Length: 108
Image (cartoon, rainbow, N blue to C red; front, side, top):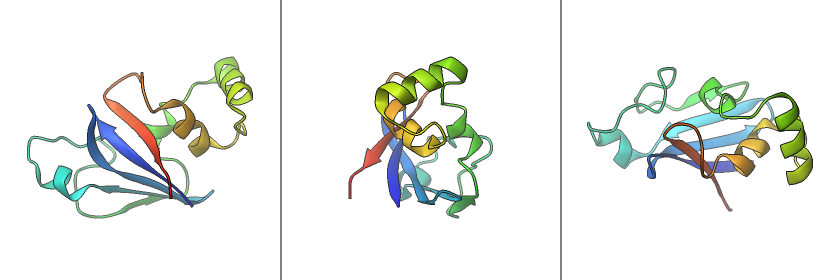
């Protein structure tokens, strides 16, 4: 199981967990959730207390990944399997992303 912290403009918004290759979970951080000024991180993941589950990486995170030749090059340079989308997300989305969302690994 791998886990990551999801930030919106450097504010912790929630956690994204890969329980298995076919089970992804997102849950909003309680402090982020109760703050009415903080928006949802995606239209497809509205702010609710519920835990979101998916059998594939959520589209809002998958769309943060490179495509084509750039993805192949990143995978080769970072030693990440090309089919390990979560691993690639952890390796590349911690800084300098397009948009307000960043994703950083949680060790443990």
